[in-house]
Structures are given as structure tokens and as C-alpha cells.
Image (cartoon, rainbow, N blue to C red; front, top):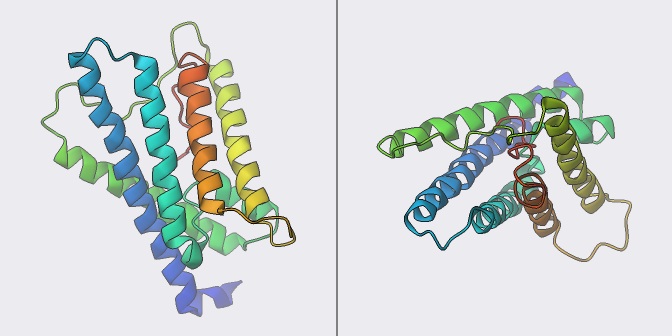
Length: 201
């Protein structure tokens, strides 16, 4: 395990996770900010439509990042995915720890940059997640667990090297899974949990 630290490919993978997470957070949360203000100005656009757009933006963003750095790091881009791959014995503990650190740092950097370039926007909460009225913490946690579970299951299923029936695009499937999780949490379940299912967010 310690021998990984001496390999250039290992550090390239860690840096790839950091950069991809920074871009993912900047683009996806930035897209959510961009959708907030037209909704306030145009009363014909409903919050549900807005949430669908944001869900698709998150899904497309993660698919793009997965396609871009998947060959370098595997494009986990989520500590829950990294933990799932660790528990399925596909990565080492050292790699998992370094990936999670890189992902969290990337999320902080991406958010900081976004905060800097959008600091003049009124009511800018940077994609704040909160429970909808009438939803308690236990219910919100349950929705987050289910949304995260289907994402991790999708990643494990689409990247399983033992499968011979895979012919589609893994990044696309994973991107659709991310969009599905957001649709579950913020659209089809009336904004029940606020949709996080991504620990660094």
C-alpha cells in the first residue's frame, strides 16, 4: 500500500480528483445559481421546472468530468463512491483516504472561486441545502441514503470488469444516476431533503 506513494500515477490520480471536483462544484452549483434569478423575474417558470434544469446540469456536469478524468483516477468525484469502491475491495485504504481528502479540498476550492465571482448576487446562498417544511431530519436522511445508494450501485455496476454485457457509456449512466438522485430529492419528492447526496457539498 505504501508503495503507491512512490508512483507518479497515484499522485496524478489524486490531483485529477481534486481538479475534477473543483470544476464539478463550480459548474453544478453555478448552474443552480444561474437558474434562481430568471425564476424570480419570470413568473411563468415554476420551481419544479427549475429543479429539473438543475438536476440535469448536475448530471451532465458529473458525466463530463467522469469522461474527462476517468482514465486517470476512475473519476469517483464523491466520497460515498470512493467508500463503496473501498468496501468492494477495488481500491486501497490509502487511495481512498487520499481521494476523499482531494475531493473535499476540491469542493472547498470550487466553492470559494464561485463565491468570489458571484459575490455581488443578492440572496446568493451557494446552493444551500435545507429540509422542506414538514420534513424531519430522519426523513431527509432516508432520502439522502436512497439517492446515494442508487448512485453507488450504478457506479459499481457500470464499472464492474467482470461484466461482459456492458456496451454503453459508463460516464453517461453515472451522470443520469446523479440527475435521477437530484430529481428524487428536489423534484419528485417535493424538495423533501434539499438534495445533497454528495458529502463535500
